[in-house]
Image (cartoon, rainbow, N blue to C red):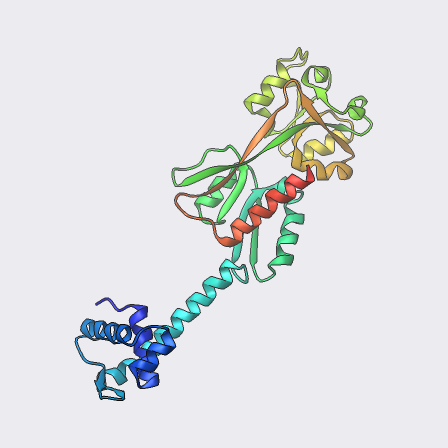
Length: 298
């Protein structure tokens, strides 16, 4: 049995007005169209729903039984439409996002605050996690989508390019290089280096150790987290690299971010989500605002 909303609307209009003609005016249809649609409904059910008199139609016993059911169905349909409209307009919904820890405390907060000012009814879950956990968080359903650099992911996850993030040289504000507007990798060869795991991507490793550097990579100070590297650099314990979005921490750690050249290096960041699953209106709205804010900041 295939009963359409069009058939139910015609049935309700005829039942409530007692006339196919008045039902047609309410629905902005012709009287013959209403009569045809109701005939189709009766054919689907296998029973007549109206006793047809010359000037008025009245419900049969089956029609009277169907009337409250049809009203509930239309009420449910209206609620679905209203809820869908609210979600489309971000009057409700949820935003579940996973981002790297440093991004979560630098780039994300002002964007998320601006987003919630516009759409206060949207609930938010922000998972501030490690770079390696971003795809996994999406895979296990902890978040709808994640933002992060290139990382291994399972076959159920797809990624799309978000933007390139420049990698900067970072030193203490008292460091001799702090006044530079840019710095070549070759000019950093004599500085003691502080490294954290993501420092050792192939492009950074190549630039760091192939520009006449005297020290070996094994001689660098090794730490686990970017924030630790920034703290050590601020105390004069060496120099490091950091993504552009971490610049918000310059004052806190008393460091200077300087563009690296020869070669300039950018890290590609991606949006991770489940295969074939469209992002929600809340997710799309947040990402649009993130891109706009980041572009204006640069």
